[in-house]
Image 1 (cartoon, rainbow, N blue to C red):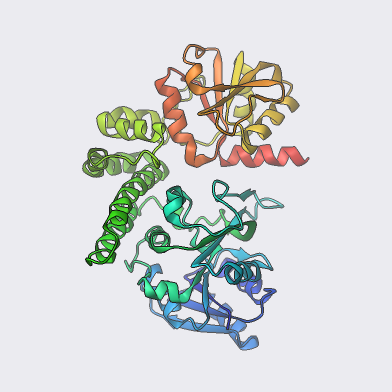
Image 2 (cartoon, rainbow, N blue to C red):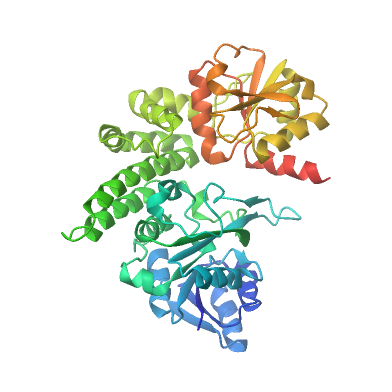
Length: 461
């Protein structure tokens, strides 16, 4: 058997049939689909059994509720194939997903093969966008994580990958089993990467990752500190994996530094997703850990300047940091937009870009270009004075007859009549916005996911 596909299920009956049908229709036929039902109380069990009844490749494991980590681990231990894949029960696969992943794994004989994916919403007639998380790394080429440490910074996306089962077993790679916890893909993804000598990425998106499931853990502010358990598990794994004398102690020290970087990034992400009262509690709770990160140093080939500056701000003046980043903090005049975690309506976007005399677009990629095209269609492109980038490496000097400026060269241009539209992937927006704020720029407008989907839709109308 070529591939075992594990589907952890808990009360996702609304989406489960679409998920399982996408696996039944895979172009790769030599598979098994292991559905591990974690004590669902909806119709998930019946849906699973309806597939088991008509397709012998489907297997069902029904158990009491023990949490996500234990559920996936049961599936891993039950898997019989050479490779293991994982699909969330509210997502669904492209028809050639596992054929593409398997062919690549066999061709290059890798420990891990990983692909891009689509963001999917039923509220739109098409996918939101192609999520190219792997663009900074080589495609269709075998590489080692030791040569590309920043690979630790990509989204865990454990469900758009294929793992050699023997590799997981040899390195004791399993999910953390914490009942009721969330984000258990964080430590699993770290374990996978920390041991990998042979990795391959492919550019094609192979999975539809649902972003409109309101029951998803990323929408649950009550799970405030679950991410902390995952980061503790990373440190525990480094200690355990490298405790023997015959292992590479130098690589262990590198991994401790990588773990510190991952901790900072996940703490910032978790902080920004929370509502205001929880943000304050979380920020204060992690102060000592943030100080430890700064005290023990930051690997220069991992941390960028904006991240180090943000870390300093979180530690040195947490109350000011809360003020300018807190959810719901909004100037009633709608002129100053220092908040970094707020969705703007299309009407507000249109109002804002028409109000200011000068506009700069921060970014030079697909989001920035589509923002520029949107402004052209709105006939306010004459206000755009140029594009801004953090460095000139691999960035053009001119885009659409507009100059591309280095951020450091524009210290003196920010005033009340200037608006900076931050048109970057959301994982970069917060650091860049804080940097702009430090430079005196208060009129900052983020192209968040709501605006982005509108701008990209508008492009195709």
